[in-house]
Length: 505
Ligand SMILES: *[C@@H]1O[C@H](CO)[C@@H](O)[C@H](O)[C@H]1NC(C)=O
Ligand SMILES: *[C@@H]1O[C@H](CO)[C@@H](O)[C@H](O)[C@H]1NC(C)=O
Ligand SMILES: *[C@@H]1O[C@H](CO)[C@@H](O)[C@H](O)[C@H]1NC(C)=O
Image (cartoon, rainbow, N blue to C red):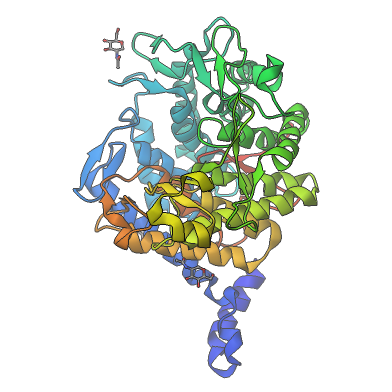
């Protein structure tokens, strides 16, 4: 990596005397692009810190704040791992100071086990792994221990959620009364997106309780019943009964509600191939079934590939979401790891499909929901459907990361500069259309002039994900960068917080 940096500096100096094509080589622009993303991160941090800290999120138009995540400072905790990877000690110290003061036993609102796990618990664990590992020395080592202590405190507050007849947790809990919202089922994604965080916490603390609780719940998903709700090997229904762990429906998708269950199957195998071989097998089954049964090509653009949904009446649903666009990255991660070129190729097809949803709109940013069902095309979107292969069913953009995330995986796995250019284009458009005086706002309609106006909210995941994956595409080589094959020493949770992969003591 030093070699690359040195080359880029030289190339910059020599640009005037070299043929024009040299000037455009991406390696020359890499540092300035990384700096541009850091600048965007600092801009968002400064606005949040001035107007909203220690609340959960900034309202970036009115300069007010929201507390959608229990008022523990979600944006600060979610920003920690990115600030560390950008090596900004000032921000890292501000966040650690805050984390030390959080009382996770108190909040006035119901707590989502899933959201709290992926943002707060993972943010702190990741900060610990990074500052005890490749980012050691960025801040005083004596300040790092609180991240693990607070992770343990938080999990101890949350763990009663698993105290159900089956061990499948409630997702919405009242930590004051140790009650819940009375749900009878839990979602596939929210049940299946705990195991990485809770297992890592056990491996770091030596207390296996957290791993046991999360893996017991996950076991129902790995051995699903009844069989009719697994219509194709590995693809399972989107809800699970809290009472007995059986599946509650046969709605199949990689979209919101199901998505990160599939994401974590292969990531658990990255985390520890010894313990999580079954998770790999289930991901492989799901991936093969998806290629065979869910791959779908718009009638107007048969060259494009999206993943359809599948219902209990054995019908495909020809619609998808921004959220679903993590799928390309998941196929690329699994494909490179397992040396399966068919998965890599399919992953790149999915990445290209999601790129189309960005590249075809007026803002160059993709919509929240879209469809390619030729039966439902609205008249005013005929032209879009004919040319781009999809039409928009919800045009909002709320600062989601999944498309940039999959571009990043495509870049890391193939080394093809095209994907880095796609990251840059997406980041540039977010910077252009979403940026306000104090941060970044959502858009009402990605296919309208100026995004159809702005939404006065800045989700914490702009810090954790959008700006992290954008930065990593142009950042120096580092231990935490996604690697080809089985070389990964870090694995990213669904909120883009990297955890150190397990190494036997
Ligand atoms: C760190 O972030 C602060 C606050 O946004 C910013 O002012 C400063 O320039 C950054 N420092 C570095 C070294 O990037
Ligand atoms: C949680 O439980 C406490 C104690 O029973 C109650 O006072 C409070 O209103 C509940 N909170 C919510 C958000 O339901
Ligand atoms: C679409 O992609 C092309 C080629 O990469 C690029 O020149 C163009 O600016 C993109 N359009 C948008 C709206 O992003």
